[in-house]
Length: 271
Figure 1 (tube, rainbow, N blue to C red):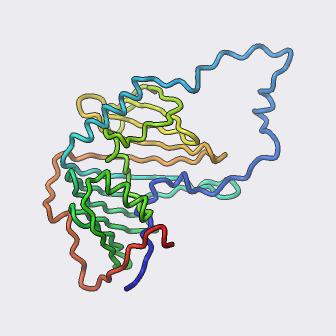
Figure 2 (cartoon, rainbow, N blue to C red; figure 1 turned 90 degrees about the vertical axis):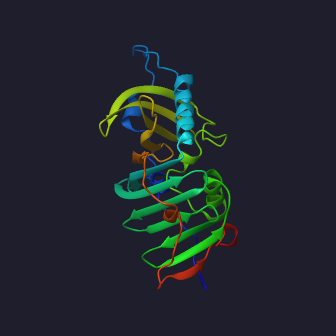
Figure 3 (cartoon, helix red, strand yellow; figure 1 turned 180 degrees about the vertical axis):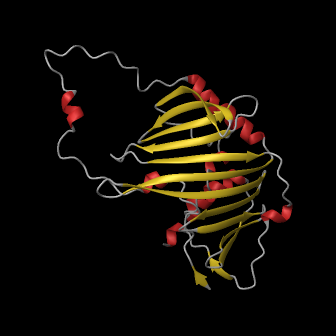
């Protein structure tokens, strides 16, 4: 039996794996100009960078509650991310994904980029990873809900499901801890829909989210900035929703093509 590693399905965190930019040997001119001088006028007071607006946190919770109430949906995801070369030059790459979801335990994810093609099927009993280009597939028995599937695949096999937080918001596992700042940044139009814009800071990452205003608070756009890299690379994700999809149960079952070959899922600990 062929053994292949269960690699990440889609590079949804391109900013996190960018090459480090060269560090400056001296402070940049702007930093020097900001040094205190006896003749300089006092600097204006700055807002508290660590302020957490409870309303911004509540917006995430409200979004999560609504997402958890959706039983069946289809979401199309378009991602652009930056990779930073060692000389500081940025290269932008794109990827896309299509998710079909039937809660509590059915998922089909199709992930595409110029470098990778991955399909994932989960029918509530078996999870299957298929690589169309190589025509290999791997299967594992599983019977948890989608939040459990997300955690299990990442922890045991290093497999990341696109926008996995969609299955975590509205649950105790929602990524709301360690938020250092949270603010309402106003409103924008995303793909023709009015959205509330929120900005957050957690550790070395700043992230922004645009949530549809009104009775259906769906996330429509997400921007992540890696402050751990001097080049501040970003990823931008756009989401389009269909809350009345027409898929069947067979959508979540995998039937291998005649020339496909079985491969073994390799847990992280055996690498």
